[in-house]
Image (cartoon, rainbow, N blue to C red; front, side, top):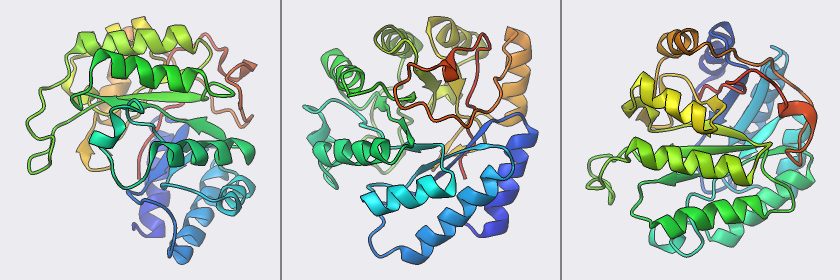
Length: 269
């Protein structure tokens, strides 16, 4: 786990570069046995909110008490991706069930924290699986405030190392479909966009994406750097929206009804 100075300095750099939301991620199944780490993260949330930034975390499964503590600290959103359809999920993930993911999302919503949940394409799933994941997201009690759409970046030495790169047209179709079925949700162009040209990313924005994750890395995979993203925004005439601290539990409020295109920019610590 990164130390306090590293995290807070990264948050300051993200804010200076124009990001409005800072996301802290840890590749944990849950927070069991991590009381000291969780206490530290709660402190990070408080300090980053004091910078007038939205704050998001992705820490694995949560219980009700943990969700409430994060809410009290000022957490804006919690990311917990479904990753793929219920049917394809067991072929990819064995550390937790699909229903456990849905339970965590429910606890987050009950605590009054905005839900950020999406998935990954390029895992070997079918088009039906992609539709299935979007159907699950769009038929929740309320649409997620944000839906990250990730394209797999195959990593050598992993079970999916031989997967073919995701074609930009598949990403565009996924984004467009997500926009149609969840019209008020922030659709975040996320991991894997580093492979797409500026023109291809522009098509993603035109098809419905209105947010990105920016910063050097998304967990362990490379990502577009701040300067490159700022240059792209200038070229495309996209203006980041201001941070909002109003919790949008239904994706139906005015929080996201902005004319600006690329809001909710994230940086991962």
